[in-house]
Length: 142
Image (cartoon, rainbow, N blue to C red; front, top):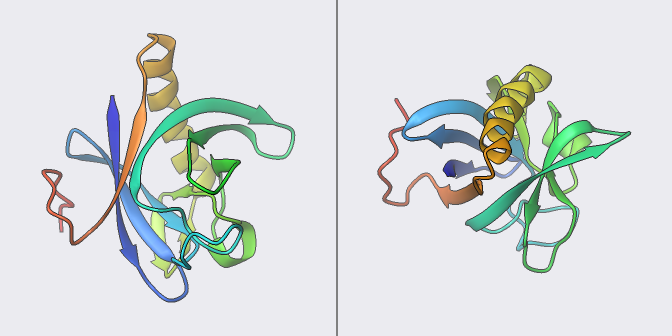
């Protein structure tokens, strides 16, 4: 199964939307693009495997692998990329600005329910990250 994250890049953060079969699952926030430098940049566009992960800090969340030149790239709750992220992706319910959103925990719960149901069936789940101006078959409903 493939989820598609369609990004728009800004100077203070990266905003996006995750789609499954053309239907929007949630929005996302990330750090701005800074040449894939660890802890200050979002990760490069590409195709990544999603795995379930649990930690005391983030509780249930997801991990992306493999990420060139980076490790521990997670999908976890956060509402302000510059204050709360170090290269990870945060699902949000609503975008409120560049790299900012609201109701991240609700969006993460929706995304986890979807991904966990697929992984439970032993189906691999991938996240394809691409720029909004790339040609793609997924509609952003704008």
